[in-house]
Length: 232
Image 1 (cartoon, rainbow, N blue to C red):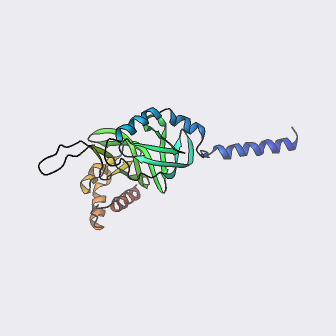
Image 2: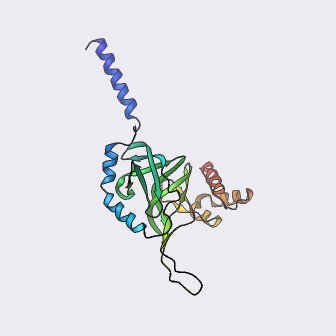
Image 3: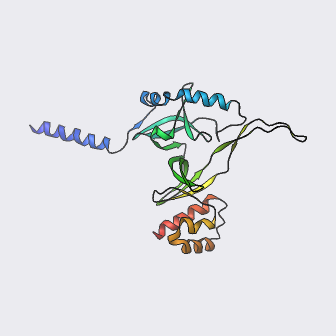
């Protein structure tokens, strides 16, 4: 092999390594659309059922630009929104709305604007479940927000109030903490410190008192987890 061929081979080998070191960034491609279209019949059933329910299962019904990771590939420039009742992201392509069911889609991360959502296990009422949560703090310890929508059942009229149809209601945000890729645990104020952080409970409680933390917002929880990370 002459010198020119050796140099050319090395160049293309280096190019291969550079491009394969990270997942490719892709626009909406036919393979993504084809995967989602397999479930359009289910989505149509969902829509017809939701039409009979007042309100909305979305925090923001508008589609916004975002991206997602599917089977090791990153797809960008997508129009996405999150359905808090169904627990999945919907995707708009032209006039068509499709969706990704998280149970088998292989999508572990979704970005909408500046917000990142990850699909993970969490503890709820002593049961392990899975769902999307919005990432607030991404350190050794993760701080996440979980939110869902429920359907309130119809109510008959009374002497004081008119009858009420079934309706969606967005539930308050719940804060969760995930340690070392274990299932996330709900944080409910200072009483959760010894439960979630048994190894440094005393130090964290002292830090909480010193900083006068009330945990009325997520900011205090983020600072608590940053301090916890510094102890490790």
